[in-house]
Amino acid sequence: MDRKFFMMFAVVDIETTGGYASANGITEISIIIHDGHQQIEQFNSLINPLVPIPVYIQALTGINDEMVSEAPKFQELAPKIYELLHDKVFVAHNVNFDFSFLHFHLAVAGFNLQTKKLCTVRLSRKILPGLASYSLGKLCQQIGIKIQDRHRAYGDALATVKLFSMLIEQDKEGHIAKTLNIRSREQSLPAHLPKEDMDKLPSVPGIYYFHNVKLKVIYVGKAKNIRKRVASHFTNNKPGRQKQDFLREIHHITFQECGNELMSLILEAVEIKRLWPAYNRSLKKFDYSFGLYSFEDQKGYLRLMIDRKKKFSKPHHTFNNLSEGYKLIKNLIATFNLCPKLCFIQRNTYSCNLFGEGACYGACEQRESFKTYNERVKKALISLNSILPGFILIDEGRNFHEKSCLLIENGQFYGMGYISSDLIQANVRLLKGHLTPYPENDYIRNIILNAALQFPQKVREIDVD
Image (cartoon, rainbow, N blue to C red; front, side, top):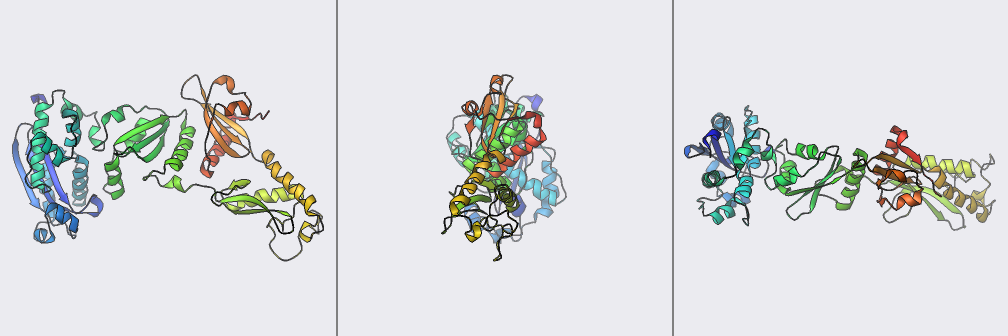
């Protein structure tokens, strides 16, 4: 390494009782101080984690409860550990794992560790490209470094020092110096995520996908600024299990540009329903809760009812809650003189409330034939097309030559896409040829309707001719 980049490095390895810091302890630590040319100091110690060591961890590391029973607690070692680390560059193989543990446990002990970091996994991928594996054991085997006491802190730390020395020697393109540059945030990235994936991200609205090692999508997110939003996932290194598992699984990022935030919101919801990513939670739950159904009873009368939406059913309309459904059905009753008892609005055994007022013609007591009554029910259902909203919402596209277009038809989300400005006044049949149909859900419909209320200047009534 060029002398102008001279600085002190702390090469660290720890053994722990589990995979995330907030609920697990450290059982062993090794810190080797390196000046960029040679090893100048080291610190090694077993640590009493104050919790039982799981059997599988004991089998992996060889460290058992008896070995650590008389070892110092982390609280006792914290001042020494902080002294060794706080003014050095923190170096480790998969650095964010070791750093998350030490940052968390030092914070509990009253020390705030803030250092630059170097990950020998990421550096190895750049300086020693094309190897079959970059796990410490397999990597060292491929490049001729022998590890003594694998899965023990000092053995792995010593192997990491030898690896780091080799990386310094072979770093002809200055990757280490570039990584340590104050403007570089590469060391905050997950160990397996190529920086090239981050470099490709645009600063525009859209959605992004995190993929695991098998390229399966594990998370979908939306953003006003894709690049900025993705980077925010890696700016903290929370010690909880979910965050640490999430970071370990990220191997690649892909994205789709959208014309505006609304398009991003909708596409995110569609893709979460389609892909069902493991680390998405909230939007999986959004769906219609209730539907307007019709059926013919034993006496031949068509009956309307609001019921919970069932899988594979085809309601005439859907609602997020009962009150929304009852509001619509009461409107149909009043407009088409339907019977509240045959629509399950009146559920007692008394005579129909509206029959005595002349608003119901007696279908509930068979004083009106089912044929006559059913004609009005059918007209009521047809009227939904005029009662329910239909419009397109026009907004900014991905460039100056296009506009985004979302279509609501009969109160339902049809689809969306991008059109040229000369198509804005086209009828709905022509527009559909330029839009991608999407399955809708209550979440999507509501955000479009809310956007239409908030920005009426972007709404155009549809021409169905």
